[in-house]
Length: 196
Image 1 (cartoon, rainbow, N blue to C red):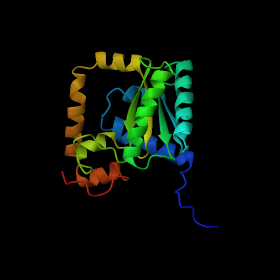
Image 2: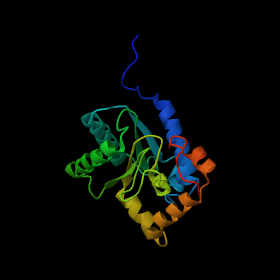
Image 3: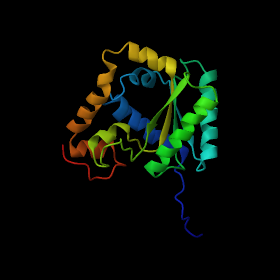
């Protein structure tokens, strides 16, 4: 059988395991999102694999999860992380798609109900270089669409002293990591990260 020119997506279980490990060790373990610990420990973060490679199919996955969250109590599914295993190896393509995803939320009447957070293996903030450690705060093993309930975000922000300090604290945390810690926590990130 000839080799496929396009890499096949990993099995869903493997992707869920890797993203779960990242949530446990990085997002919760490093306290990058102080709002994630409770839902994670209570099993309220839903992990779903979308193996699609076409934008239209990915938007269908997004629609299905928006409907699911709307119909499901927060105590069962506080939030959903859609793991995109078949698309967006390139960060710029992923970043372009986020505009379509936001438009889909608006067109579906979900604005003010849900919001999207974005994570990608090669995430790069505007004004940074690819190797800058602050990019690690949004780097995940796969491209992700994280659906958050606006109500929950508002409650979390209101109950957190100085929530605007979270990004600065996260950057400082990433800068404090040693090279071997970065390799352990982010094995999918190229090893050229600068020594801290």
